[in-house]
Image (cartoon, rainbow, N blue to C red; front, side, top):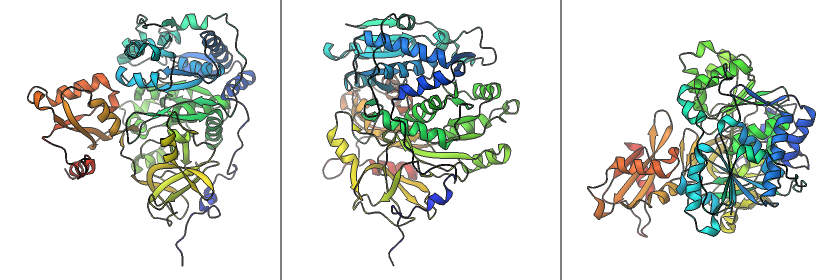
Length: 572
């Protein structure tokens, strides 16, 4: 008898599907901008955004986005032009994101932790001529742009201060952490931009320019988020309005989203989950977003209590941290009705405490930049712990043998593949990488996730290993090839191999095994390498451990045998 397989006709997870929901959705044939405009027409005076006590109504949000869109159009932006958006979470990010879409352009979201050496790629690869950022990051972007050849540089940069979005003296109940005061309150001078123009946020919003006609629709590119991988520099993922729309709408209905939701937005909006499953999903619903620029457990506790937060998407380490607060008993979490997230597994003991103490079932999900966040999610009423969940709305997901590409039996390990309207259109300027990322399976185009997993008899998916070489540090994905490529720019480094090391808090952390050039031996320390990395790459990518070696293990063809080093580290 042939082993059981999950075929198109065999979907046991439908038994656990929320009874109120269809298995697939037909999203609106409109642009993402229309979601904001419609919500503003429906709920003009309703709170759209809350930031340190400052409330932005939907009417105000759409007005500011239109003003900025008019300015972007006046700068010469045309349909399909990329705009680099580099900010921590703040109202200006939401305004700028929708303004770019309203200007018929494409959002290029950038991690604000990136340094100049990394930022150059986000300027020249998408051919961006305009960047929108905050004053604490502007000098780094200018440094990156100035280092490029003149024809590849930015022509315009729009710079906001955090205090453009709130009154420092009026945020009593949402008081910022003391350690953030310099970061959030300092008004940095605007940097110069070689061959370009720098404009303040106030100037950009004080526009008398005409608003261009809305020309984009479902089939046009909306966002170009970048993802790293097993080789070289990050690749841009081309997402259309339709793929983002599908998962925004699906995330909303899957999590009982309504206009009455009050959502804590702390996962970063430069990341696909924060952008799609939180920002776009809540704007689509006409809900309220309470924005945190980054994580702080005491601030999170105060915000949930004061604003009666109902919905919180997070990384499990945030929940663990909040529950460990010595002030936890002072916070009122009774308003929470939906909590979940991904990026790392939620420890079973913590999930059990949420259930027993608050009646909350932690809903884990799974997805990639290429799938516009969720391709899988646990049914809210029937979640399994430390589980990816079931294929998301409209998604067909399977587990196949990575060599033969044949579907494997229930319970067997294989590569997770997905097909559905949330899957991206391909990698920007990378046709070979696009071709390698897709296979034809049962007559449909499936995306290869590069993650190994299995399916149980109920149709729930579990992650078992990675086909791709990647480190998961507190939910941040670190791609060793990218870190190595940056490290090779250090004059003392002859060779470097980046592997994962165990970390009690982050789960995994970054370790680099380094061979120094003969000319630098004895003159450069491990700490010197760590310090250089901090100057030249985002902090989460920086190797916490550097180990010098005389040589790296190599195969007969001369390739570095990173698995050998990884196995040695795992046994240590």
